[in-house]
Length: 410
Ligand SMILES: *Cc1c(COP(=O)(O)O)cnc(C)c1O
Image (cartoon, rainbow, N blue to C red; front, top):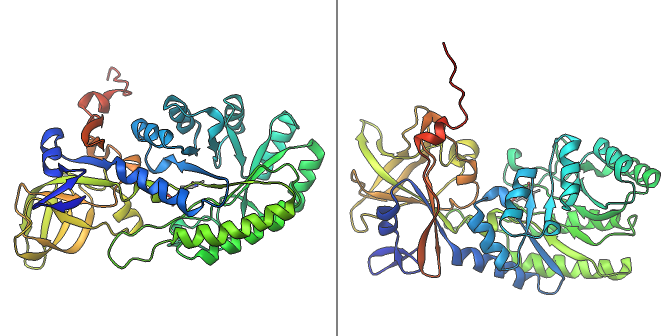
C-alpha cells in the first residue's frame, strides 16, 4: 500500500474504492508484493539449488496458492486437507511437503497414497512407517535441535520442551528403526519457530543438521524451515535473508561437497511471503470517548485477526479515510463481546465514524485463523493482481453459519 496523490493505493488502485466495492471488513492482498518476496528469497539463495515450500497455513486461499505456484513455489502442508487444497490449486503432489504433528498414522498413510513428500516427527510414527512401507516409500525426518529460537515461547518450536520434531538426542533410536526396516530417509528438516532474526541461529541449526546428515546416505534435501521475520513496524529487527542466503548457502555447499553429492536446500516461509502483502480493511462503527481512553470500534475483531490478542502481536493501523486530520491517540477495538483490542494507544489521524482503517501485516495468519465467533461472518478476500482487484473469497452468509448444524425436534 502506497500513499500516492493523497490516496492509499495498491498497484494504482485506491484501497478505499476496493472497500467500497467489496464491503468491509475485507482482506486485501497485493499479489505483486507476494511475488516480489518470493523473488527476494530466490535472489538471496541463488548460489544453491533452492526449493521454496510456502507454509500454506499462513494463507490458504486457493487463488494465492495458484499465484505462488505460477512463480515457482512449492507447498508445505500441515494437514491432509491443506495438501488436498494445494493439489486442487494445481501443485504436483510431490511438490507438496507434508509436515503434520500429532496426527493419526492413517493421515500419514493418506499422504503416502497421495504421493506427498512425507516428513515424520515422532519415533512411534517412524516405526509404523517402517513396518508398513519399509524401503518402498522414502520419508523425511523433522528433528528438534533443542535450540530456543524465535520471538516468544509460544511461537518457538525447536526448544527442548516443544512437541515438535524428534529430539536429536534420540538419534540412536532413529538409526535403529531405519536399519531394522530399511527406511529410506530422503530429507532432514528443522523448523524451530517463528520470528528468528539472527543468522547465527540458522547457522547453528545447520551445523547440527550437517552433523546428523552424514549418517543418512540417501538424502535429497535439507530443509531449514522458516521463521523469517518481517517488519511489523518501523525499526523492527528483521531477518536479513541476503546475509542468511550468503552464509548458510556457503556452509551448505561446503557440506554437500564433503557429503559427496549435491543436495537441495529447502526453506518453507509463510510469514515472509505473505504477511506484508495483506491488509485487513475495516469500517469504524463508533468513536467512543471515555474519561481516560478514546476507542475506535470497528466492524471486525479477534474473530478476524486474532494475532494481537493471541500473541500480543503489533499490527500497524492507518486511517485511510483521513490523511490530514490532527493526530490523536486511539485504542482500536473490535465488535466482539470479549476484550478484542486490535491496537492500543495508537496515534491516528482523527478518526470519525465511517472512516476506513487499514490494519497492516494481515496477510499471514489473518484470514487463515479467522473464525465465526459471535456468529459473525468471516470477511471477504480480494487479490490485487495485474492492476485489477478481484474477489477471491466471498464473505460468509447466514447459510454458512447453519450449513453443518442438524436441527432436531425438541
Ligand atoms: C508455520 C510453519 C512454517 C512457517 O513459519 P513462518 O514463521 O510463517 O515463516 C514453516 N514450516 C512449518 C513446518 C510450519 O509449521
